[in-house]
Amino acid sequence: MRYPGGPELRGDQEGALRRALWLERFTLVYMLTALVAVYFALGDSQAMKAAWLEDMLSLIPPAAFLIANRFRYKPATGAMGWGYHRAISVGYLAGSIAIVGLGLFILVDSGYKLVRAEHPTIGMVELFDWHFWQGWLMLAVLAYTGIIPVILGRMKLAPARALHDKVLVADAEMNRADWLTAGAAAIGIVGIGFGIWWADSVAALVIAIEVLRDGFRYTGRAVLALMDARPRTHNEHKPHPLTLQVEQELINLTWVREAVVRMRELGHVFEVEAFVVPATRQGIVGHVEEAIERVRALDWKLHDVCITPVGALEDVPDDLSPIGRGIASFEEIRKRAGLTDEDIASEGAGS
Amino acid sequence: MTPMRGLAAAFAAALLGVLAGGCQYPRDVEGTLDRVEGGTMRVGVSHNEPWVTVEGSAPGGVEPEVIRGFAATIDARIEWVPGDSEQLVEALETGQLDVVLAGFTRSSEHRRKVALTRPYVDTELLLAHPPGEPMPEERHDVRIGVEAHSQAAGLLDHKTDYGLLELESLAGIDRPALVWDYWLDDLRLESTGEDLIDEEHALAVRFGENAFLVELERYLLEREGVWRSLVDREGEP
Image 1 (tube, rainbow over the protein chains, first blue to last red):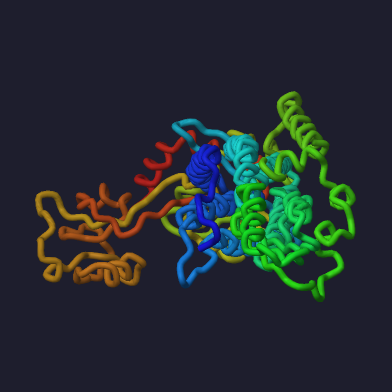
Image 2 (image 1 turned 135 degrees about the vertical axis):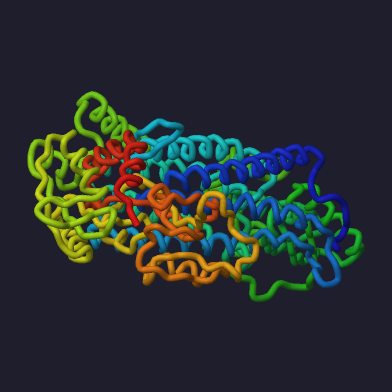
């Protein structure tokens, strides 16, 4: 339920959504083939094991996206008054904690082998009557798992931005980082070939650190999203331009004397809650209705807008809504947040 | 972009080194292959018929035969070190030996301490019957001949419904029996096609000696058929 109702995605976003769905399905299938390929080339290498676990983790974001997509657009019910948008945040949190756990596992496992000075052993492999060193097979498999995800990651960025979908962004980033994992594992294998026994475990440690970094970053983001943090741009780098624009839109109304706005992300859409001090109480219902329409017209992401007229504002945090309270200008806040014209054009109102 | 380039450069340099140098690749951590080539290979042997028989000065059986052939290809002299397999494995782990022969299979518990080669031969424990005397349908009524106090007797007892007929020796048997596939010829029995276990036989080498391992495995792979007939010849009930 929300006032007023209407469709969630703009017509032209359906294309982006279809493209995202296609890309994520393809990623899932591709990752499964990569998992099988790496599994059969695994051998005795720590780095290959780490790369395999990392590939396994790459299944989480596409799976979360595809599963959440089945019910995130479901309308609200009596029991779920805000709808199901946050399903994806829950999946995101569970997935990112799993990533931290696996990072720790690789770290401990490889660190232990390094301390015990275990010498990795790679022998011959037989493939269709052809005999060669298994290290070459490992390198071939790593090339397969290192190159294609980078391309997939790049292809996912455009739909991720269009849909403001953070799981897609996380997935794209993870894919783009795959070359690092594959590269580190490859150096480990080549090192084994040169008789440098520690190269393999060190490569696995590098992968573990990369996995842990991802894990902590995603866990932090997921926790913040569930704690109703202010919306940020799709890549989390800056405050979202709409948080500024909504304040500006409200304070621009002649009947509004002061406006305080708080926003949170419900999955890929925002919920806006505003308290406004009106200059006059006359025709207040019509004014509020018009204000809601204006805010919703700013952008499709402003999904659920709620405006409450109040007599006076109390206990407002100092850094909340400086524009709406007339403390600072839009321009000042924009500069302080580091938002460029380009950011505003690509993610702000009407993008 | 910079770390990516650095990584790619290091990688390219490493591969170039391998290709241009034409040197040994993969290499050993401790240089085993370089040492035994034209030198002495220290081979631990532990009695385990028919794989290794330690009697007299020169060990016999399948595996010493295999390693003699390998030593000849790399011009190595063999120093035989007889002993108990447990101790030999420890000696191999700490670099006192280069190979241990003890009839190991790929599922050996020792694989935590030493590297096992690819299997050079697979053997099966089979249910067999004399030609022209097919196995009866009702399993409970049949007593199957099996070597007393053997792994085979235990498997037959636990994994099948057949009755056991424990014998000191299977030589000259004229009834259904549980036998290794390399005994079929000697006993003039026919396989029923039903096997209880499948064992992959391997030799033990030191962890991380990849040049030596690859050299040995290449030798094993190239003569797979030879090992099968060697096992058929050496294996006797």
